[in-house]
Amino acid sequence: MKVLITGGAGFIGSHLSRILLTLGHEVLVLDDLSTGCYANIEEIDDGKRFRLLVDSVNNEAIVNECVSQCDMVFHLASAVGVQLIIDKPIHTIESIVGGTETVLKACARYRRSFLLTSTSEVYGKGIKVPFCEDDDTVMGATCRRRWSYACAKALDEFLALAHWIETRLPIVICRLFNTVGPRQTGQYGMVIPRLVRQALQGKPLTVFGDGTQTRCFTHVSDVVDALWKIMNCREAKGQVVNIGNNQEISIMQLAQRIVELTGTTSKIELIPYSQAYGEGFEDMQRRVPCLDKANRLIGYKPTRSLDDILKDVIAWEKAFPPR
Image (cartoon, rainbow, N blue to C red; front, top):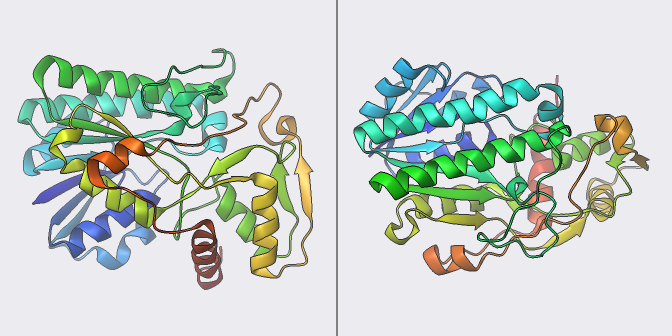
């Protein structure tokens, strides 16, 4: 098959590109390199089975051309990271909602299968744990721009599901929970690469808030394997599916484990949210996925532990220190 990956030069997209090439498919990547980078896909860019087109998913003519050439579309292009969302809320909303609308229109025109990578952020401030796909969502006030990302992604989901309901366009939505691994940057607020880099540089590990907030981290290899299987699962069409790991850890415990694995003498410092992101920032206390649907549809079970993730990220950061 020939597969289009929007945002394919990003962290997850570059890993997905590799697994598809390994399976024998052709890959076309559409990426404006605003948050992705060419270094992520340089080694696989052979101009034959892999091709990169540098442009925006908001360019309707280019998107139509790309979709018409491919058999299926993985839509990963999106603003990423809390810091970017806080700093550039206009870009966040326009790139997410406008880009998804453009890609979905093209998929509808050419009847191409479409997979949307959504986010656990859409659960908002919900307190029912674990989060199930049909749970109610609880969003913060619109004056808190932190929630613009969650609301934009939720609107993406509504739009994709509308195409399924009205025309049976084959779509599937995957809500990802804190995907981590080699090639992820800490530039936009991703906690593990940021803490690992601080530890390796002998700097204080900065934990935002009081450190009691918990997250579940998933190895990117588990995620991209699940994305491919979900895309090819007939029963998943028109469905929203959580993809993640249900091994829960507090951010303080995470920082302590990174200190242990890196052998650093760095201390852990607590930074108020107001200092990190500005006044009025709100966060989720827990974010744990229910994985029953993913297991039922594709037999999904995460295969890599948190220590596996941390060791891979540490090895990557040591091999490719930031310049």
